[in-house]
Image (cartoon, rainbow, N blue to C red; front, side):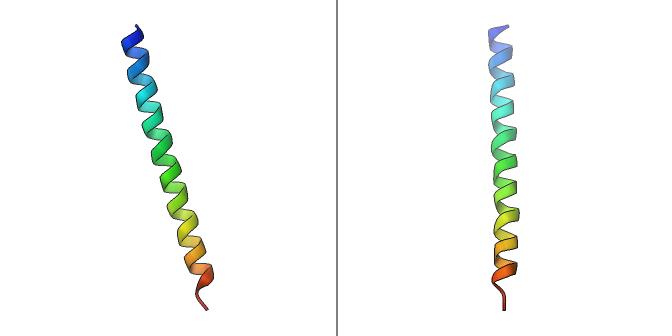
Length: 37
């Protein structure tokens, strides 16, 4: 039970970090596009 919960927690952390990085990439792209004259 505890091992299963740990695996689930690790999986959720991975998804969260992927989501955050994807969001940051989108923000960066928008920033670069806005900086273009």
